[in-house]
Length: 150
Image (cartoon, rainbow, N blue to C red; front, side, top):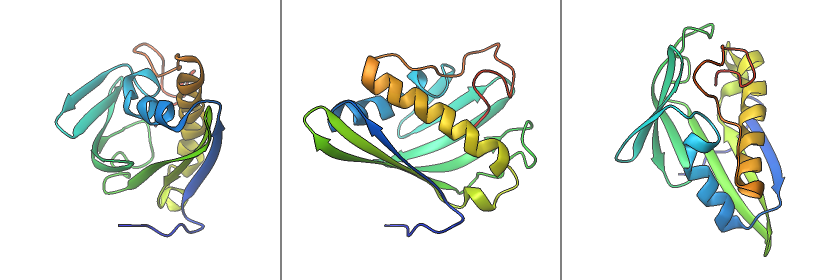
């Protein structure tokens, strides 16, 4: 299934100084760029941010939000059903581009909070791919702190 992007979608295209394989591996290491508090079960994981959590089903480069309770946002479960894509384009032996899309995000109540949060976490993902170290959310960081709730 291919989604067509629209003005309601958050789309970020980020150059990465790492191979496409390294970037794909980094995307899968969610606890190293998004949240250090993670529970995995088969093709799903739940990322925790203090009292907030988001459950994700992973199907290759496509993620579907299957559950959420994020009281820090205007609508606590607004992302449920949303699709995210992490498409990786090889541009050279040691370079690639991450094409990230959160479909429908810009039409949601949380877009003013969530768009900058994604920028922050995707910068963490790029750093992980390029240097081996990301800056994921860690317990004790308040919502809206160093790493905003996503």
